[in-house]
Image 1 (cartoon, one colour):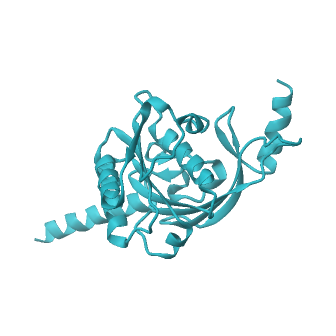
Image 2 (image 1 turned 90 degrees about the vertical axis):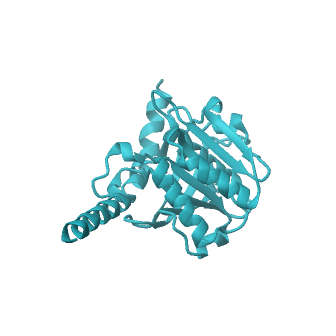
Amino acid sequence: MATDRAATLAALRARLARIQGGGRTAADAVPVAKPVDAALPGGLGLPRGASHEVAAAEGDSGSAFGFASMLAARACAGPEPKTTFWIEPEPSIWPAGALRFGMRPETLVVVAAHGVDSLWAAEEALRCPAVGAACLVHPKPLDLPASRRLQLAAERGGGIGLVLVRPEALAQSSAARTRWRISSAPGTGMRDYDLGQAAWQLELVKAVGGRPDEWKLIWDQEDQVLLLHGAELAAVQPAKALL
């Protein structure tokens, strides 16, 4: 009996360490950007085998779609690319636009589903080891049991679950390992009608085993990287001007 108890406690400690980032390697995380990764569990990036919530400012769903597309693309990249499931009541993702953030259209599966059907589809996708990311666009806040089911499904499959929610959903309890608030920021264009590179104001609201913080980031489409507005961007742009 004592041996069983010790084994159970050891397994629980190991699971807690994985959740909070202890012993995590680069393969267990999806890189976001250096300053952002440092605030996440283990300092390596977005934890795999976990669900994450992304809320965009009202009327600014494009920034959340872009951010989710980038994360999904990175979660699915590799010698044998994995599949991304995009689940939405009325799918509005534009594959050509997602391509800008690194997503490969041939690995994208779009699912039209509502309510409990969309949750079922997300759970089933996350349980599959061949799925690198499942993106669920959910107009209503998830209750705690639903968010727990998504988290458990992600733990089983090893991919990342990305739940795109409305801003008010962040006020409710959730089992998501990280929760984000994102909005568009002015681009880098210097002339009229030149938007330049996309820019986001990104806030990490919650991170189990990490620390909340916020950043202004620029998406460098050419190099497929997020740069911190300021020093990182200033260091990169002059070098590119010489190419």
